[in-house]
Image: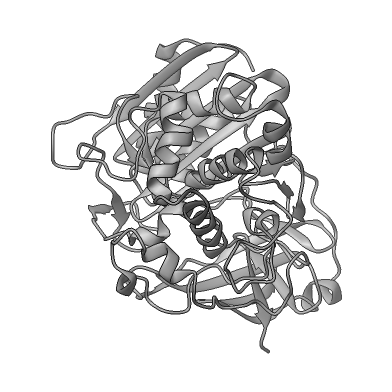
Length: 419
């Protein structure tokens, strides 16, 4: 990737933000010890504070590589075993399987999380219960799962005799000097949701985030801090050994467009192989991306529920957009065999043939508000016999696939055919 000035990066960020009507965006690039960063827009619509590279955003699921990093510090010390079940859990899945989304668990908890409260033992009490299981067992298929990270975090807290948050601070955040990163943020960007799915207009939002969810998506951070974290995972100093860093970046389970390591997505859809993780929470979308062979990292944070579209624009300008894949020619019969209604945990898909590919109409129950959201129908073009890519719109370059007869995996989550 060609090095560029902060001014050019700022121009690209501003263009992407304006195109998608995102309130604010911050972007940074680290390359072999050098950093350039830029920001554009507002921390909150209607207020004068502007976004900077040090502005704190909720990074949502970028928390997962942090949690996996913390777990690996315990593995190094002999306090946690990757290939054993989390101590005192009722799961059949191992720590390794939970950190790589192959634990056979549904993504969310089967009952509301607010009832577990904010006490230090909330996570321990939650994980004494039983999660919802998928119709596949541990180690069989990748299916994105927040709940698995809660079980690993509870095991960490039990092993150290402290809270998960304190363990994260003392073993990961402080050693890396991440002073702007934590589970609470007093001065930060404000989240903004689209007024309805697919709309350009935004409204500010503030929804509670249960404490027990923190291990899968509760961290707040800045572009500058995320690049420090990335530098460690590209070989810089920090709490992990080179062997632990390599283990986190080793493929554990296959998925559409690549594989998953321990807390990291290992993508094969760009011009170069990348190690990355996206984040999406109420009113925020983000991405942390590493190119190990070039010792490059990119961090991008937005305060919008459509911010990933703006982030993709910036990545394309950086030469890190999706590589063009030739469309696969599938027959009407081959496509029709994949159509139907599919049901996952709290989401439903209607799949039909359309223009040589498939259309997907999706409806989802929000895990926070419990309201049903109906998304605009998207088109998928075939790029393999059972794998499809969304070519345009807010979800462009996302892939979905049919890993086994009777199942579809959409946005990483498994759903079973019901008719």
